[in-house]
Image (cartoon, rainbow, N blue to C red; front, side, top):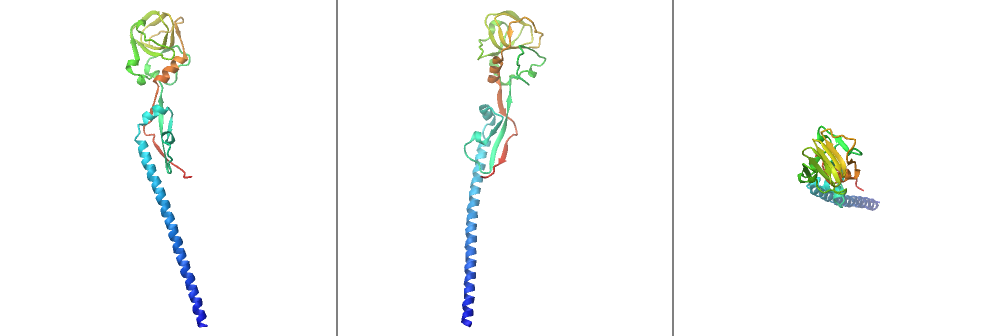
Length: 227
């Protein structure tokens, strides 16, 4: 009877020992798996941080000028996947034409030119200063010009001109035609003039001289849902 009790006690003890060891091994295995998982995520997090730092250092205005879009996301800049964070920033568009581009106006009267045109994106050598029609640059529909008349002009145009003329003086032409828009602080409105609105001229000027740049303080680091 005593032997039977000892055997039962031993069996129970063995079962307990096996159970404890099993729990220990399971706990150790779970701990190892958790450690591996933690190491994996730590590595990916550091990889994200390094990638975002390299993107942050890039010239954002240059990127805006190249991509010409309002929102730049990380997928626009890199094919590498992010695990925790997504990088993006905002660009802003500066049109040659303030508020809106003329749609049919061949003549616009202004008090302040800056209320109508933003010439900051135009190089000084690409704004032509003239004192007579003979000084007008060569122009075409695809390559229109921006001209400032520095004095009164009342002459005959020998060949068609494509572009914008800006003046504070009398500007009256005969002969060939001007295609585009006349901006004037002087009262140059006439019923009869060789001036024709041409939307393609303004569209080509806008394409050439409008520009994009980075909107300051618009960087965002967004969380990514792990799939």
